[in-house]
Length: 499
Image 1 (spheres, rainbow, N blue to C red):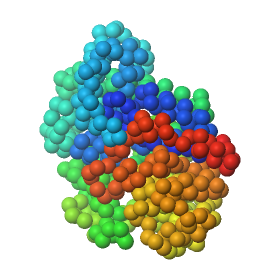
Image 2 (spheres, rainbow, N blue to C red):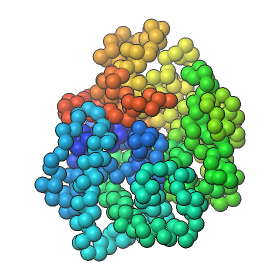
Image 3 (spheres, helix red, strand yellow):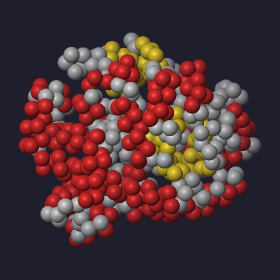
Image 4 (tube, helix red, strand yellow):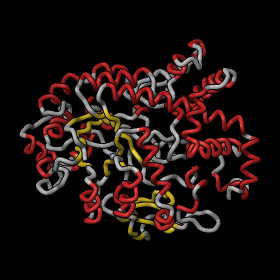
């Protein structure tokens, strides 16, 4: 359960201001934590920290590793402070755009810096902290670093197009490749070490200011990932290591053909035989990175939708029972204190509710979903809230509050909203009314996307589900950060007992 009544901001690391193309673990992140502290906030929610790829439009929910960190989040300025770079090496920097994440340009720029930092590290003599990191993280780091090196060696090809003996992870073939790619493997371990150092320092800074970080675990992993390559036995694959079924959701009012996500589906029977070790490791890794963490698409632990591999739509899928109570009881035996938030949006079935009740997991409620025709009965309206949940104005998958009001809400939705709040407001005020509704509710936690604190329109939206372009690129500008109404938020936080 969430023990303390509090509030916070949803802002991914890449959305922070930075002079180097995307937000990172550098000075702006620390200034943001200072602003949260001044506003008496208790939570900073982010999206997954895993590596991203161009092939998936840099979605943090489609990663080549469920355990590694995104090295693009390494701060060039912090590399200088840590002695891995000279300040002069940061120049010349391209003229990166403000207000949008420039992933490819940021990666190109950082590669030169990373090469220089790695060379300085390699010639600096033994580093006991690096060696301790590699020893402690070896259970996931060794496979990840080899996978990254192999991807480079085979020019970015998916692992199922590598030579058969490497696809099948034959020991002799892997030994040969480790020797051949030793330097690239070491470089990736170094970069993971630096990312871990910088994130740990930022986490400590948050902890010292009584701010908890809420992380995010995508329930599924990408097929072209170290997770599937190194652990094919825990996924539903055929003898050629191809998926037999893939993940998705069925047709509904939002999509006539459903959503075909394409991720491989877990073989829960095989996982059960192994004591759910892979998932236990994933939870342990998340506990290293976050104070508590949201599990995306929580419903799949109760029952999940699988579609025959090769289908063009999700129409022919079937529902299959998930691992349910057995899974969480096994995790609790291994990690008695893990703290998760259940992303229980959509159809909340009795099986899902039973899991939430059995383990006291907090669920999520979204104010943007509250003002449709069934306003009196919807679980998203504040008068139906219980204590143990997190209320959001919206999430990364929603429009902004202002965008909802201007582009999505019907006139009837708006009238219900005005009647419920007792005020008739325009687009320039709707975000504050929604924030006030969430903050005054009984929900133990209220999280506000930074875009809604700023009152930004639909152009600031983070993600359009089921689309592949234009997502994950919004960034807060320095001017927006400087003008953000943190004092107003502090006053509302204190007034509603969340400070």
